[in-house]
Length: 331
Ligand code: KG4
Ligand code: ZN
Image (cartoon, rainbow, N blue to C red; front, side, top):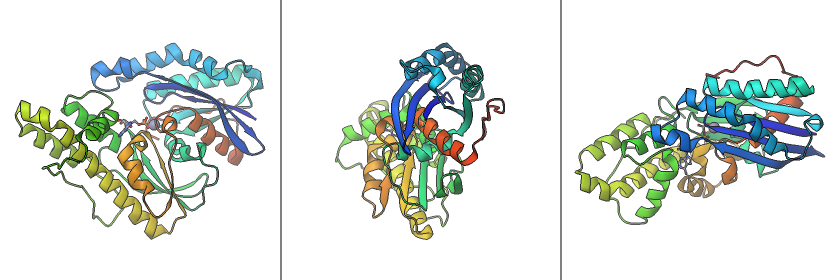
């Protein structure tokens, strides 16, 4: 069975062709057209600009994903319908409905956050259940119990900013550019093993629940930076980035261990843009659990994870949703 995935929830237009043979899921193409260069100058994603840019490239991206494969040979289209930016989501949903409707292909709608959760399956075949999922993206920070595909329970989430959002906002405050995660992690690497001489809080580190909070950490970083002169701030920026990243990693890892122990899980799955972070990956891989991370190309937004989540959902529901999709930004 051939599956076409389409993703346009934020600032990446993505399409992926995948094939399932004998129960094995294989990625044939994974095309991602990023809008980062367009949004960079605004310091963040501008929704209307994003939607227009998606509309301009979506058919080309789908065409590149298909390559020489004829659309008529596709058995299933999977498209993100939320959560995300409503105008961006609509472009992907409309494109998918048009292609599916015209070529008479089954269509299934996919929850973007579920797809991030399942992204480690793209490069790991056997993952034991029950599993604990840590979703860390620009829009979400969640701990999820997973009994099986389609059987999820959110046990903890952020009470304010998502972790990727905190990386982006701190980078903006320090005038480092957008998106903040990769820039902050690069500067933290530059800091190396030098002593830091500064300390930021680890919000909710010892709270007896699985929730997170990153807005106070962001504000504490701002106050720390404001106390410094321009020259001092320039000199100290790599140290601030490293301490900010350390604080984030400490909280994420401690809460993950706490949940893993409490629920007696077999595996830990990690997904979302922030799962590209090297420090976080290293810290999680050291745990006494089987930890499954996506390959770097599947950490950020991509359509292969949408195709995978769509395939699993279609197998469960066997439902063709061609005309039953509304973009759902707050999913
Ligand atoms: O999953 P994603 O591509 O989009 C959403 O669904 O939100 O995540 C994007 C987020 C951004 O906030 C970006 O700064 C963050 O992932 N990110 C990182 C790294 N690479 C991307 N955060 C920390 N370290 C990284 N290396
Ligand atoms: Zn995402």
